Image (cartoon, rainbow, N blue to C red; front, side, top):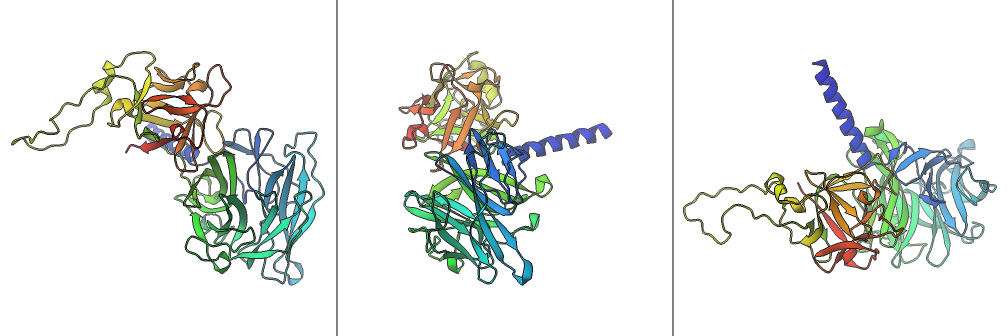
Length: 480
């Protein structure tokens, strides 16, 4: 009885650990008020309230180790030319001044504390609030516009959020602050397709699993607003379209950051104020960022399971190049006479696997029939190196060890056994239009980054990713 209880408990712990890994970053991703993620010399950095922050070698496994003098709250970071600009805020509640806060800026040639070039400049006061006005000047955010102009946004849910232009050479303010939003904080500006967007956090913070934080957005044709939501409400009058709120067991989404991986591939970073699977601690989260009808959309975390891998080009599905075994059953045109009507069973793997050859089996793209040779199991591998916001996956024919693999001649095939070789590990990126890019970690005998591609309508291959080419795009349809 004790052994059975132990086994059951152990299985539950393993299941919970795998669930955590699939839905959040791994390692020690504990941070409050994370800055926008910045890449420096092949590593990823984000800073948090109180000083320090997180470093990642691959964008998937995170650990503490960043260095940021000055302490304070809610920093942000941006690369400008060959330097990094880091801003943060401090508060002074003395002498009865409830909301006297200042924003400071520092420059550094690198974010790597082990580099000989690592040295922050002296902090420089670039703005804030005096304690008497309707603004609490903390939670700074930075944006470089498409025209090379640098903008700073700051403010909390006490009073107004403000925008001011900075000189991109020295971060000195060159305009007067403009009020752009009310009753929100942790503002972050970004630009997309002719619009400026203000992403801000609404609700109450700093309450852990009781936080009501949620991320909202408005947009404007000007960086100084006005910012309207999707139904025409001005954010300075309480408007804001919901981007992301709490989820089951992850509470209080806030502090948005945008990271453009490449054209057509974007990520959003933020924190959950309280993660119930991690003792209610505040954790870093990274999700796909999509765009629909001119508005940002937060993608869902990837879910392990059985999928159809469907080409966006034609709508056909990726399948083994084997003979199609017909289902046993009545004819579709038959009236059936007096025979009773009863459900038919799906075709099962054991019904057909004996007809498949051994060793490598090639691939094709064909009409979806929901057969075993078209059913793929996609599983995140948390024990290998990942990439920004995700883990590499193995892709196998469901119920078997037969794995999708890249070949040295820049083609795709399946091998009888999954070995964990780099050409059998697959990166799955949600694209900004909602489709997917499926890319091997490595292709034998080449350093090119190639992706799964449809050649015409029926032949899969590998090719260079082009976000404007539907042949590079796939849909993953989860099979329940």
